[in-house]
Image (tube, rainbow, N blue to C red; front, side, top):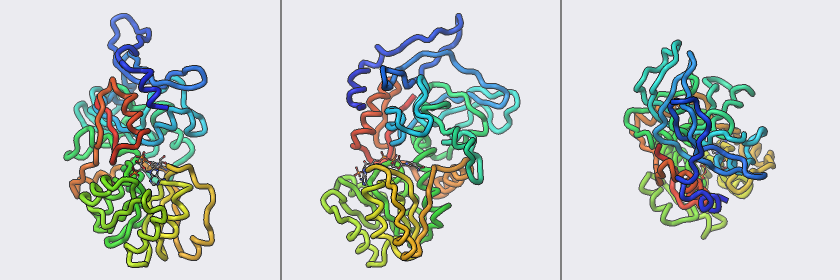
Length: 364
Ligand SMILES: NC(=O)c1ccc[n+]([C@@H]2O[C@H](COP(=O)([O-])OP(=O)(O)OC[C@H]3O[C@@H](n4cnc5c(N)ncnc54)[C@H](OP(=O)(O)O)[C@@H]3O)[C@@H](O)[C@H]2O)c1
């Protein structure tokens, strides 16, 4: 879809539509999911610059990153409410605060921040209301030069990270953190299975390696597996040339099986991941790259005395815990491709094409 979409919208400069603005009002550029017949297309629009209310801040967004979810959002097949027409894409972004509302004490102008994935999920368990505040494709999308947001819906970004690196954290980084540490209780020496070399899995690799665990990662590409070894992979398996990859993963653990899995593959990988799981292991149910799995293998889980956790990103407190760990270990997220604001459709196409390792970023 996005290769088509990319062709439709290039050159991007032809796309700038002027929304009606008050005389002399300051304007900004933002991409929107614009209705096109029954489907959606990306449209670059110039709109009036938003101003913060008393509890809000305005962020000059400097970088955003893409997640698999954003492709689903663009196709209108994500979430119960679907994608809202003329909403701003992307959940993940980082930038600097340029204006603060009268009641804001949490941040000041000039602070470097990233948006949290769910603008209102601060700590503890989520609620239906807090989950409804996921950014991108409904309200609060980050692919906009200025974003106005509740001051509570931001975190300070670690000093050692650029905006481009920090923009990769809100969805993929927090998900990997929650799956391994908060829900999985990762310990030094644990064997960790990571599927493919996309955003969540490469974060999982970096976090597990930094914690002294033994990450084993799969990929369809030997070149990407070589990159994974440079990042500290204990073991690598090509799932394309070795369709029974779970046997090799188990062999790499000496036969005992892995202690942790970040299960992002879904229906094709879940049964195999369970064959690679050891007694007492933990499997974080995260994604559906091959289609979402629907059968819970109760016998296998009981027999292994294993734990399965459903993960839906995490809270602001989880993001802050991730940031503390990144700062302590000086971990730099892997930004593989960077596009300019005008080339956002090409970034979506790159995400769809799969020829990347880690994260795809757009600079604003
Ligand atoms: N529940 C949550 O909170 C949450 C949060 C984030 C993401 N997710 C979900 O988790 C999944 C991963 O997200 P992401 O953003 O990390 O994806 P991504 O960055 O787009 O990952 C793409 C990579 O996944 C690998 N891959 C594709 N199909 C695979 C398969 N059948 N088996 C193994 N690897 C496969 C490929 O790696 P190689 O090129 O190396 O083969 C591909 O390059 C998605 O389904 C996403 O919707 C869920």
